[in-house]
Image 1 (cartoon, rainbow, N blue to C red):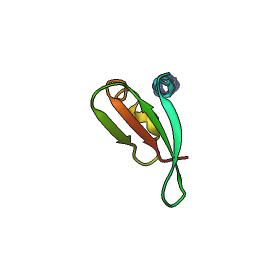
Image 2 (tube, one colour; image 1 turned 90 degrees about the vertical axis):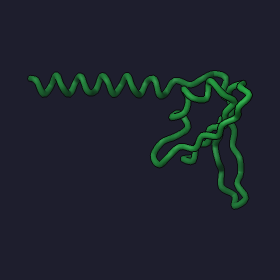
Image 3 (cartoon, rainbow, N blue to C red; image 1 turned 180 degrees about the vertical axis):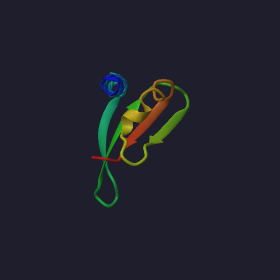
Image 4 (cartoon, one colour; image 1 turned 90 degrees about the horizontal axis):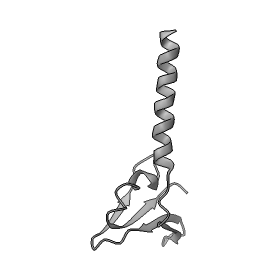
Length: 82
């Protein structure tokens, strides 16, 4: 019984964490750029700050990783997994 409660608690926390990561900022403008070798690179432009930042995620992630940081700056977030 304790194991069941622990598993349910874990699943609830996982669901809550993924829901916040999936929320999108409506001011993000998405697009596709083509690299010099023909590969597609998805990107999002957002923010209105004076400082521009470029965010590139690591393996097995996507540009949603940076959604809380891009609100404070003028930012470009690149998603390498198309």
